Amino acid sequence: MPPPARPKTLEEALALNDLLLAYIRKLEARIEELEHRLNQNSHNSSRPPSSDPPNVARLPKKRRSGRKPGGQPGHEGHQRILVPPDQVTSRNDLWPDECENCGEELPEGAARVDAAEPRRMQTVDVPEIKPPVHEECYHGQMCSHCAHVTWAKPGPGGAPPAFGPRLTALVALFTGGYRLSKRAVRVVLHELLGIEMSLGAVSSCEETVSEAVAAPVEEARQHVRDQPVLNADETSWKQKAQRVWLWVAVATYVTVFWVLPRRNRVSAHEVLGKFCGTLGTDRYVAYDDYPLERRQFCWAHLRREFKAMRERRGRVGRLGKELLKLSDRMFQWWYQLRDGRMSRSTFQRKMRPLQAQVEALLEQGVRCRDAKSSAVCWDLAFRAEALWTFVRVEGVEPTNNAAERALRHAVLWRRSSFGTWSERGSRFVERMLTVTATLRQQQRNVLDYVTHAVRAHRRNLPLPSLLPTRSTVAPVAQAA
Image 1: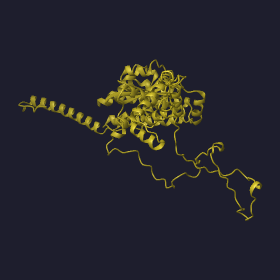
Image 2: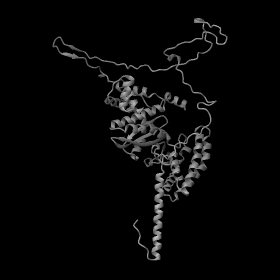
Image 3: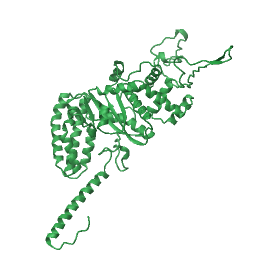
């Protein structure tokens, strides 16, 4: 603002005073906004915890209880499960020689009798691994008539691959499941298995696995679009040093990933297709084409918005504090419902007045002077129907934590690998992430599945499915 001219009359002085007051109010609003940005962290915004400055408090330390470390009296113990007797590879039977009570000599040999089940202790070790190596020799024979040497040719299946299906699957699992770099995979193979493999061969194993699981992954994608409840989220990825986006959709027993060039509504439609169930997400605009009555906004994100409001001054701060208090009460009831300590009818009855209080506070927030808080409250008040879907629809959770948890492995992979450098690499990423996440949801062995898929792919046999069956779902239900 240029310095104003010196007023010569009372009217000019009053006009200048009004101008300066307006400018001061503008500067105050600007200062408040900058202070708000400066105070943003992972607790009151969508910033990741890794971006928090040193002065941001971490999780509160647990108070000392005064009890000794370890299991407490009455705690159910957890011990290592012994291997069944038919799986024991060697055994040593030990018998007592004399009675520890009276010193009487105890019988030996065939006269011994077990007074009770023996006390078993087992030692598990890993033997030195020597991978089997199969060799095919193509011999040449000289013709006695023309002296031409004819060499034997591979059978109908062609020349055998350099690496078997289990080793190929293991390499892909090292990179896609355990986030090892290709150079680290070479070291592991050399030191643990005595196998030499080039970086190009590691990449070739990844490509083989990617092709083997392509059809099952596509089947899994269609499966999640047919589910009644789905959670979706997205995070950034790198391809050829350019930003692309990794999308995820999580159903009860299947999780699928996509690497797409954009983070927009077109990509959201590519992920969700003709999905007609209930969709749990954050409030990102890419999902706005889906009806509000079939949406559930993430309350974990909303709590961060409310915390940011609480840190404002005046009326906005009081509104944020009240909204946080109501959300605390809501989550307390939700946990009771989830754990079976409250019926759904009771939960719905208790939630009705709480919903009305939250919506009334949002209406008040719309009229507050803080522009950002007013915009958040207006958006939530306008789309309030998507705040309470979890109350009326069974199977819907109030947070989008399922999708965010599914992305954590991918985020760590991105940070250690700096993304991919080709379309082929991105396809491997999305397919391997889908395979590992889905099989772990169903408590199935990832290495066995990928080995089966590679073997079937090479022999043109039916590929194993990623979809849940009764045998794969039952153990998960029992564990839950």
